[in-house]
Length: 395
Image 1 (cartoon, rainbow, N blue to C red):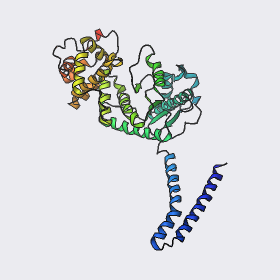
Image 2: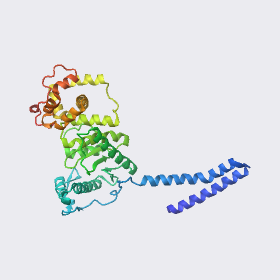
Image 3: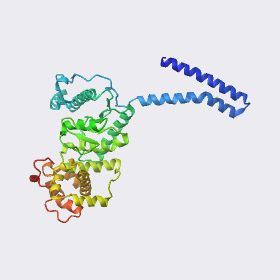
Image 4: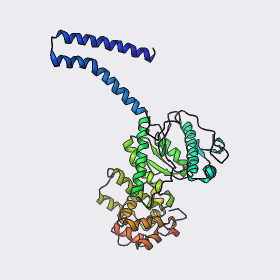
């Protein structure tokens, strides 16, 4: 039976029921206002409800200005076009890792920077074209349940319902603006380039995806999201309720906004955790402050402090993972009391020495002594960053 015929049948049934209800009201002998209200309710309320549903569904289906649901059913492109350059062969520049397509990003970058006489807007448009094409090919590889939503300044590839994807896109836009304000002088989102959010079904798919960038040997530190800066900056999260995804988005977008500074890991993570808390509040605590302080004092040694400065302690799968993020958070919070001086420190800190030289020159601070003071550890000999002891690990 067609939907139109079903609708006509339901309408006839409703009319019959309304006529019967009206006759019952007449038989009661009611007069005046009460009779009018009951009769009006019988005939008006059902149609009013249907009208409200219709209006709601129409508004939910219409994207906000600058947003588009296009791309959910369209085929992934084989070629890209831009003014002033030859077409870009998407298929010829796709590489498969872990059965997941990745684009030859240097090739796309070279092609995009030749577009439109190198005008910034034309370059950004060409880059967005290429990234969108890659997401459509990735959509096809991940399955038909995945959809690409394009917002005013973001792409979201996800299994989310359209209304949730639109709400997520609006949250990304708002978060970009708030991070720009909170981290003024540090944060930078490339003009006209869209942020990319990849929402994956579950942890297995998530770790399978990130393994192509970080290797699959050994055990991963548990996480609900990650910022990836290999070729195409994007951040990846595990699907959950929007309320659960939002703090992860705020954290990973902070990494995205700071990526141009190539910060030491501890400083990058400390800023991300503190910004996430400013935007979404502190998560439920696993330990009291006193318990955390005790755990810090027991865990950190000169050798483990070098892991912290090198950035490798953030990949630990024991308590060292939590304690690394917590130490980065409290150290950044302590150093940021003078925001202007801290901003100058952040913009001059170098990864090669974990920011040690910049801390001395800008803040007159020895990083090893600062950590010792925060943790109430008097003997902090060997706690300052010492790149010679990192074994080639990047900070």
